[in-house]
Length: 232
Image (cartoon, rainbow, N blue to C red):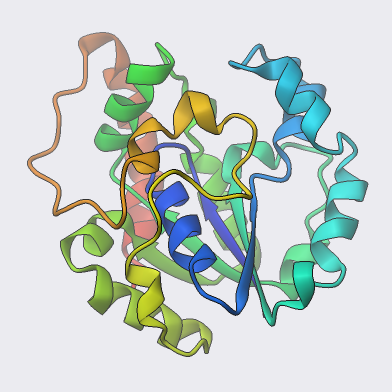
């Protein structure tokens, strides 16, 4: 089984990769279109040069790797994807051969978390409209990161059942210190999850979004609400 997990940034996506990566039967890959995205957009992200050197920059080459044999002969291949990386010109037909899962999170939480690492995110940066567009194109399972943090075992069991994967309790924890298949950008972005050994506890009240980012929040909310209506 090839599982494509689609989310925006700051959305429990790395913890979910670690959960699947702790299964003995599952290989993982971390944001395989990141270098391609930077090459096409010219954006100056942290560690840009290292990212560009670490991955193929041609989308077709990335797709060929995703669609080829699973790494290390594993029965399952979990692919952590960022929705904002699927810009115009990146092939999408291969997605129909994947088990597609869409990981959502309230925009206020995403904006607050993203702003700690990179100031003033735009709507394009946080991936909400792109996620809705991909979901409309191929469908799939929707799961909310808030629900996972509230009850990890319940929601991961529900997710496994929805995609036809056997439940494995190894998904509830992982070794401290990151995963061998982390992208090279991990040391900039993954500090908190590197210190973890499992999912963080339930989230508190929604954070206050700064005045200058409230327009981004308002623009993202309709896409989030539409996806939320389809969640398991």
